[in-house]
Image 1 (spheres, rainbow, N blue to C red):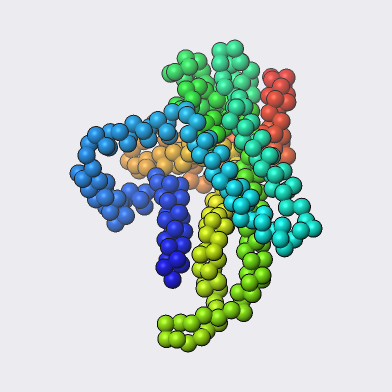
Image 2 (image 1 turned 90 degrees about the horizontal axis):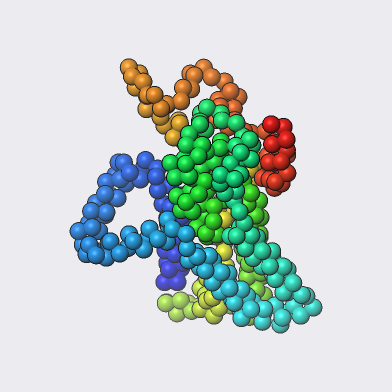
Length: 359
């Protein structure tokens, strides 16, 4: 049962880490009992850990997360290679023994190559960097809606930012139709390379699903070969009992630990990356960006915090009796039909040329 406890702890820590990262700015984590506990742990950490270690950690963390560097790209490549190493050393021998008539390498290599190609393009493709030379071109694509985007000058680039653009502090450039900066690709996700990023996520999710399927299939073949379902064990009282699913699972971990660990990890990653992929597809189909999601939250928060006896000059006025359709149009002013939204993302050069022709 020690193994099961270890697996449960691993899954729990993985889930908590993901949840804390996604909802790190949520008010629940900064107020109430959770916020108090967080503050106590933070204060204790700063009191116990030497200041030079804290300073070094902040410097390293700032470089890793807020400076362009290939660290996460290398981590991704290493993790993919390790996963396929398990495929070669633990899965293929089982498959070649029990299913000799099938080709077990073509599909995994095809998915790996396709994902690698999409990852490469996501890393090197121009996201839509705005310069003085192409400023007029990008300025003609979208109109200012007056809520999410208003006319303003970028203090770094020294020009008026086109609507839906944003200055990336990591890359130090303004990006057309900015979505977010991805540390895994060491590149911004913008209007020109969002399609590659989506295809990268989709093929990565497919890779995980395939890994779960092939790994689970190998475990099932192993169980059938050794007839584990009909096996028995002697408990602490000396009584012979039939094996349970947990006992079989623990036995598999002792015999093929890399394979079991990989399958468990890929199941978790499938839900995580698959969920993020679905979210990105939703944003594309609704002609919305991650950056605009945060901007909408800021607008709503400013509106909610306007005092009844006071005004907030920065708050967007949202009428109380405003219909859902008009509110949606106000906060998602660039949404059109799903086909037009997909065309805008997957054929960006043609879309930009068409918009400039109309203008």
